[in-house]
Picture 1: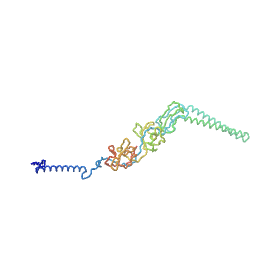
Picture 2: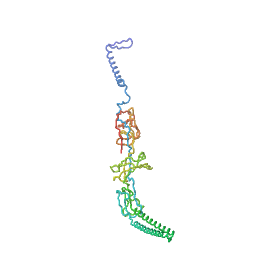
Picture 3: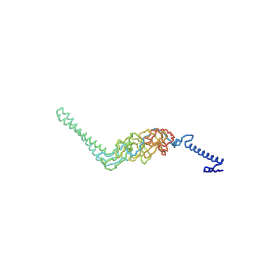
Picture 4: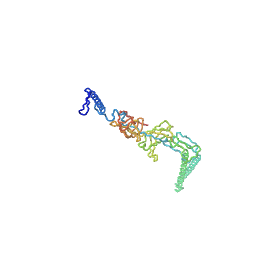
Length: 397
């Protein structure tokens, strides 16, 4: 019931004694709900059990990556090169005598010859008659010398009786000596002619394999006819590999090499026997000469590729998946002490079946990301999983 009072100039509304309790109870409930929600929010905001929420990802949340400590291994230094095949010692054969008409050619390319063997014969009809004439002159000179000796012997027998003077003896002695000298001159002329006749024939200067033939029967040859045969001494071949200045550095005679002719599925083992002491100023290249044994599949003048083992380096060896490439060059990811990925530039060397040789940039004691390096970014937190690998010498070629 409401009571109005006009004494104070305003109206008062009075509630009944039972109407105030429901309103106070609802207000208390709402206050309790708000406080509870605030407590729950604070609990989630500041961590369970009063612990602060960590800033950034934890090691459990970081991506796992496989890492390895490569160490250092002995890796062969392998050099790739191209070049041409040739005779190791090529011997050109030409006419060294006065020449003439070729009567017979006795060998063909691909045949083996011994030292001094006749390759082609030249007509020597005139030279033979000249030698016969010189032989007759020797006999005439010998007869004159014998007559001079007999005259000298008779004069010596008469000089004691005074029938021949000492001057006559000296004259007869001089005549005998001149006759003997003419014999020797004739003999020398005959020997010279016979030697010239022998030089008419084309002969092999040493044992070897005939490579080319440029003469036929009936052809007239002389000392200016040029090279008529080419012979590979002892049948030894070589590859003349063209190498850059950097590849020639440290290369020594005796290095192993494998040569593969173009178009062939066969490879031939050899070794470097000579390294060029000069560099071509135009191409900036030098020549490494690789000695090869005779084989019918090796043809001088042909093209071939070679791999040369030019020494060994003790370097870290990584799988190819660990090495990444960008515009700056090759690099790997190294996991530091805080398990963060650090980009490390490297210089690579030979690539073998065992992996990639790292010539510069690593000591071998680092933890290197083996795989998934392309999905990492510098400074990213990772969870490293160590991979072990037995160290073994790496070889190539």
